[in-house]
Image (cartoon, rainbow, N blue to C red; front, side, top):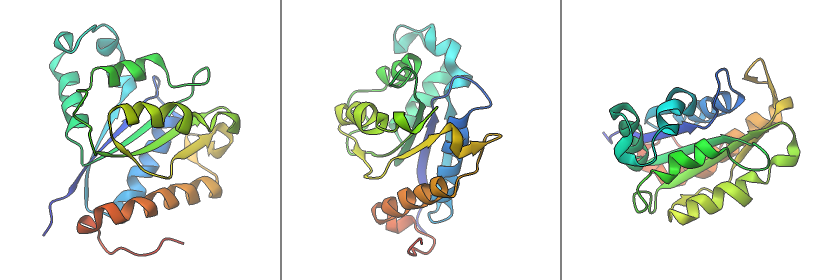
Length: 187
């Protein structure tokens, strides 16, 4: 039996409850429906204060250091960020500023974002994809964007968004066939 795929999901929302967290959890769930995964969720809201107080990695408490190591050792990274003034928030960027520069080479990354309207959807291609290109990561071809109208009470309420999540998962499956429960075409 193949070991579970080490999936680390980073939800970049600074508050809880969070549309970004709801989207992140939905993506993890969909991947888990098709792959044998061991998922770890890192919520920026839970580490925001100690992370923001650290100017370097050596100043981080052990708990935050463990999160960074988890990111660096992921077989698949799911990264979701809220859009703030046309980009990802500064604290989200600070988290990835502390990730080892060569630690994500060839790591598959599924990108996701949330924003107030569909007008911010390009954040995935214009902000997140270049960030992970710097790390020489393999950004997956389908990103997932959710606007405020796609969620109700922090739950996905849009069929189109659910279909996009399924499509992103479907496109990721060929990279991880050894971990698949039963690979099947997702309609």
